Length: 174
Image (tube, rainbow, N blue to C red; front, top):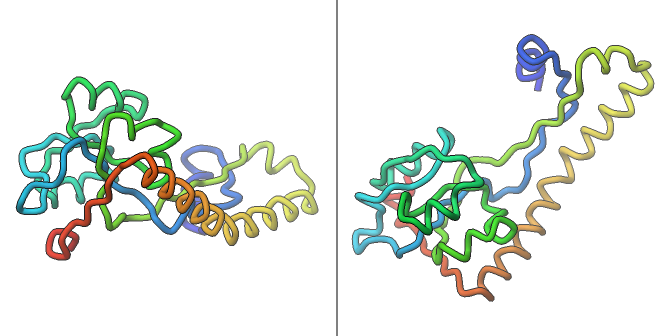
């Protein structure tokens, strides 16, 4: 975390207390229509930020940058035919209402920084800083397991709602 912490301090005046993995599943793509007969997304437009461009393009689709809050309406109106999002979140964001398929395997890592304003950090006693650093260390160790449990619950709910898993072929997943 050293180089990342140095970057946050220099660029954002923030002390990085923790950098946790939200779950082991990372990100995924979800789509309105099933994969093509070739097992890809050729010719489709898929919402994603730069994090998703590689997988989107590898599946033959064109990435479209949109804010996360516009995903449902963009799927409803046909602006995009799929979207990338953290693997956990399809239920809470109600994406399942407009997208019937989730692609597996997932990719990348979903991480979340825990920053503190550097001026506020420097005003803390060393004891208080150590307490926060230890809490950050514990959070880093436990969060991925909590995230995995949340992911399992969400996957079960999506199964119940009829959102089908489509597996990308090993060739396409490379």
